[in-house]
Amino acid sequence: MIIPGTKPFYETKLGAAYLGDALELLKGVPSETIHTIFTSPPYALHFKKEYGNVDKDKYVEWFLEFAKEFHRVLKPDGSFFLNIGGSYNKGQPTKSLYHFKLLIALVDEIGFFLAQELFWHNPAKLPAPAQWVTVTRQRVKDSVEYIFWLGKTDRPKASNLNVLIPYSKDMERLLKKGYRAKERPSGHKITAKFKQNKGGAIPSNLIECGNNSANDAYIKSCERAGMKPHPARFPWNLPEFAVKLSTNEGDLVLDPFAGSNTTGVVAERLRRRWLAFEIEETYLEGSKFRFWPTICEDEESGAEIRQQLSLFAM
Image (cartoon, rainbow, N blue to C red; front, side, top):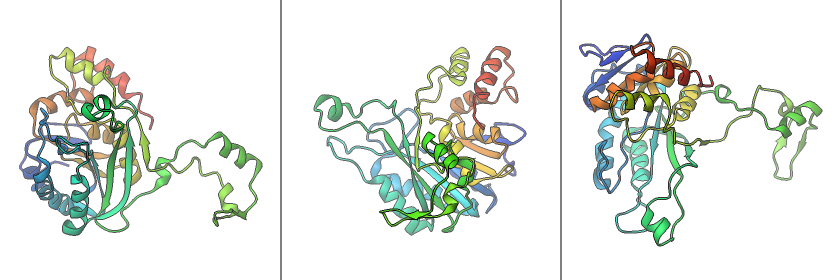
């Protein structure tokens, strides 16, 4: 999809990336055209990051202007996945409630429905804030972030059959031996349908994956080109799960805070159409390396990128 009257920064057969303010670019997107939004906006941290972030006391008001447009451009059965991290209050070993306040406002003021809370567990996350975790030892490290899954209706399009995971050894053995229908002590009635092989197990709402890909093709290509990579990338596992869960091939996915455009390349590999918005030109320029050979012309970098992309488990 191309935004009328606006030239893409780059495009592929399935998607287009745009340089500019997301709020302005969103206004050019026709209503009810996006199937899924997956994004991770700048968090409300009490210290400033180089990629920009808004103070906690202004964050909800700031974000709701974008949320109004998200609600407008989403299809009636569309999904909005919001990855957002928590934050400590300045000078205190206490947590801010800003992300919960935002969630309530998205439901009460914008009209979204909370479909489910997903959680991203990053086992590689460093212990922070250091003052409370490694110095005074009053807190344990935060290694889980929220992904709020919201819809325009109470039943956004989704199928967990698209995100099944391998059965455990115990479940494989049970399916082979058979299972006698009965009522468990918990009161759950296990019927004969339980022993049907569906091709995999239903995943939980906890997505576990590290975020320490310091030597992947994107990083190496940026270094080779003398470009600084985006400092706050999320792993491809997150948008992959959301896109598979909520869309079909050919559906349109949007990331309005694209950064290095991980969402776009995941959508491309899953044969979904995509849109990406990013306000920092350096980050968008570097994101081109993710799309070799579609837009990357450097042969040496391209070979590494193609090898990296081949690792996607589709």
